[in-house]
Length: 121
View 1 (cartoon, rainbow, N blue to C red):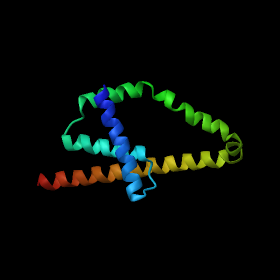
View 2: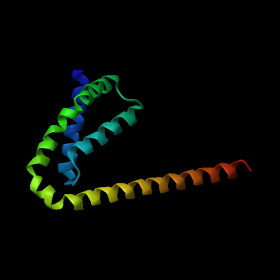
View 3: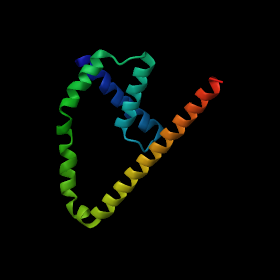
View 4: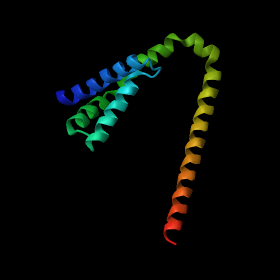
């Protein structure tokens, strides 16, 4: 378990290093996850010890959201003033994301069907 946690922690540190090195406006945890994913892709599989460590962390994921909830409570006056605008923005961006994903999927499926039809001729 310690080996798996060490690899996850190294990915997090690597993400922070990349973020600061290139001055990216992306959270270091996202970059760390990308580095960990890249590591798994290069190896061709996920390390079992890393998978077990991540499952252990996922069990307690709900607890990790408590600080975010407390932050929302502290910003109650801002939520009260701008909550409707935030909700509309979130709903519209979610809808736009779903529609874009559906369009891309449809485009790729049609392209694959056309390639299969051409290759069967």
